[in-house]
Length: 249
Ligand code: BEZ
Figure 1 (cartoon, protein in one colour):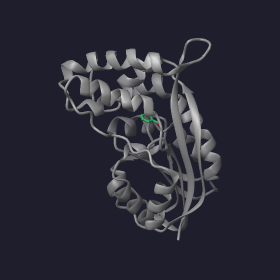
Figure 2 (cartoon, rainbow, N blue to C red):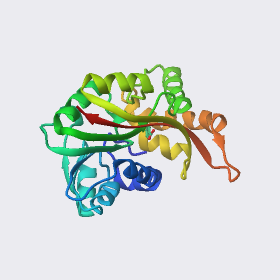
Figure 3 (tube, helix red, strand yellow):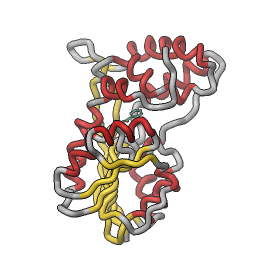
Figure 4 (cartoon, helix red, strand yellow):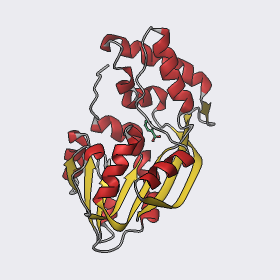
């Protein structure tokens, strides 16, 4: 098994395309206006970023992965590589949009500080991310199986409750206008093993690379028993979404 900390575009395309399909609803929350300047934080392969440009606004994608930045540029999206926890923008954007990316940025305070600085006064911060309880069974299986082999899995995701996120946002002068948390049982089109291979490897950095495949096989076996399946036998992951719009005061 090829193990990499970097996103592999093809793997993501095959195993996680549903992420940008679901993200289209979030564009309605963003309600992009002609000539606005919008930042897509954690733009991934740029598919949603490109959709936002169709509203006649200027959009910049930012992603930590150079591979994703290149993929976004290939489809005509303006994108830069950067760390959301340490951005250099000041009073620049009318809105910042982020779909299914913020839970990867575990220093939430630094992200919000950066976001607040980058937004113009009155600018919108429109986000969908994993909320408290998101992929709980999957995360527990990662910790349990790594522990069984004598390794501590690394905590790589941040899934806040509504209250915790609200307090954090308001600390950085981002006033919550609307917020909702909901369950989104999500069919994994290529199964739990492919999902684990795509997303869980950074959590296994304390375990030797040669062991990753074995760990993922054991997690797969456990989760195939524990997670729900639909009538076609496809695994349904226990996704919980936190969606909000906050405005910079
Ligand atoms: C999510 O969208 O909730 C998610 C995706 C991959 C890894 C962790 C969480």
